[in-house]
Figure 1: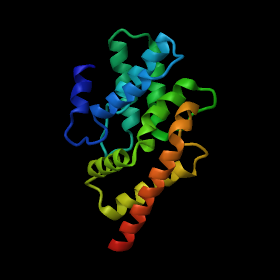
Figure 2 (figure 1 turned 60 degrees about the vertical axis):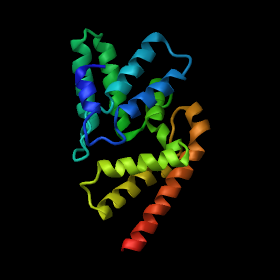
Figure 3 (figure 1 turned 180 degrees about the vertical axis):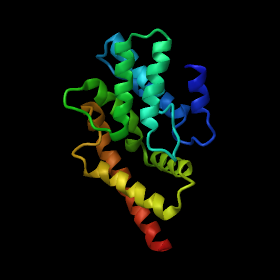
Figure 4 (figure 1 turned 120 degrees about the horizontal axis):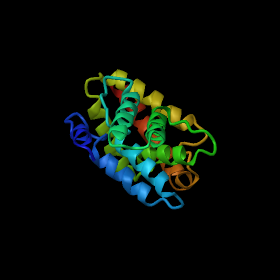
Amino acid sequence: MTPALEAAYAEPHRRYHSRAHIESCLALLGEQGGLSTTDRQILEYAIWWHDAVYDPTRSDNEDASAVMARRDLLAMGMDPVIAGEVARLILLTKGHVVSPGDRLAALMVSIDLAILGAEPAAYDAYAADVRQEYAHVPDPLFQAGRVKVMRRFLDADAIFPDLAFRARLESPARANITRELQGLAASVTTTG
């Protein structure tokens, strides 16, 4: 990890999008078989840099993270093709949409979203951490935005583009998201 990445993931406003998230993603990558050395390296770099820029007041974090990754990897002497692929994978974490047959993209997006299929207590801690990251947003606006994002996941044919992640995490993720949406609806009812 570069000093810039170390500093980025230690920023005080980060609760979920911290080094712990990166380490969790790297652990999930470590469980994946059938990857070439180059593919594993590309995914590892993409994981390290995918949340390098994280400012909850901006909407271009993934774009800025991809630019940073490409710049840093090129400065480290990395092959421009690899740097470009890392940047491409980072950009996919913005909308989480993957083309069929794109295994690296499917793994990157599924690894990034794996928290959605975690045990309920871990999911609840994640949701609370995200709320803290958006503490500057008033409750009604945050709730409306969160509902929109989470409904998009529920409305998708599949949350996890990688089939192994889907088999293991799709059902728990849908249950977690449904439970969170019910809690948000109840919160709006009691505060509204």
